[in-house]
Each structure stands twice: as C-alpha cells, then as structure tokens.
Image (cartoon, rainbow, N blue to C red; front, side, top):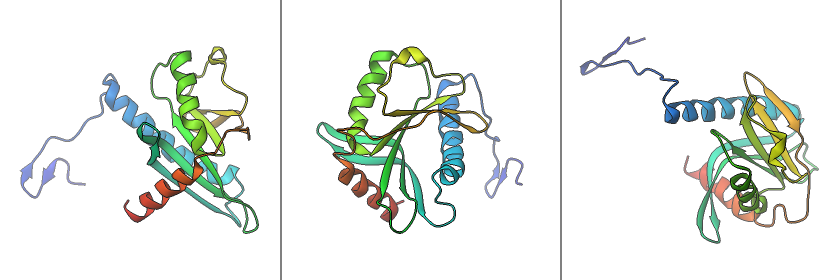
Length: 172
C-alpha cells in the first residue's frame, strides 16, 4: 500500500465522509451493485448452466432524449430459455410517492422485469407500487421484499436496452 505516497510525492489519502450526501449515495450505489452481482446470479439459477451479466449505468434511447438505467441484468437460466432483461432502479435518498410512480412509468418499457432497490429500512409500503414491480432492500445482503413479475407493457422497448447493453460491452 502506498500510504499516501505517489510517484510524484506525498498526497492526501482519500477519506469517506458519511455526512456528505454525494459520497454516501455513491457508496450505496457501489455496495448495491456488488450485492446485486453476487446474489442475483445465485437467485436466478444461472450459476450452474445459464448466462448472466450485470451492467451499471446503461444508456438507452428514450422518447425525450437519453435515459440512464442504474443497473441492467440480462438473465438466461439455461440454453433453451429466452433472455429476460431485468432493470434495477437504485433509490439512494428520500423519494416521494409521486416521483417514484413517475420513475416506474419511465422505466417499465425497458425490461421484462422491473426492480426498485432501497437501502435497508428505506422501503415504505405506503409507496403503493404496481404489483409487477419487485422490491429489494440492500444491506450487507440482498433482501427480496417482493419478486418482480411480468405485466402488459413491460419490455416494449427492451430492444433499446439490448442495444445499450451491447454498447456498454463494446465500450466499457
């Protein structure tokens, strides 16, 4: 470990400040992505015979410009199964019921399954989410509050998500 030394001399060691909202949100995003990568693979039964990839910040073309999807998992449990695109929106701070409803509407076309990931204790049943929206709580482990399901209107623009995944793979 360099202990603050660089090839150009001494530098301050970066410190995490939990009172800094921006740093806290970035840390939660990183922790969420790590937990999703580790545990979604196991829960989707792809660990033995299937295909699974997870990418963060996937850009898709939307009716009003570009939409950024926090996390996208492409899941294919076995070689005979169809590919299923899961979109995960990571909720980092306080959110209103109306803002959450709008975000769900905006994201629904981009995957066959839609998940909202909250910090541990951050989900409130008063949010009144549609039944097809899966709810995750992220702590040290992944806690599935409600499983995402199929619904009419989901995945109508999953081709755009596939393009975004391909571009992300080609240009990481």
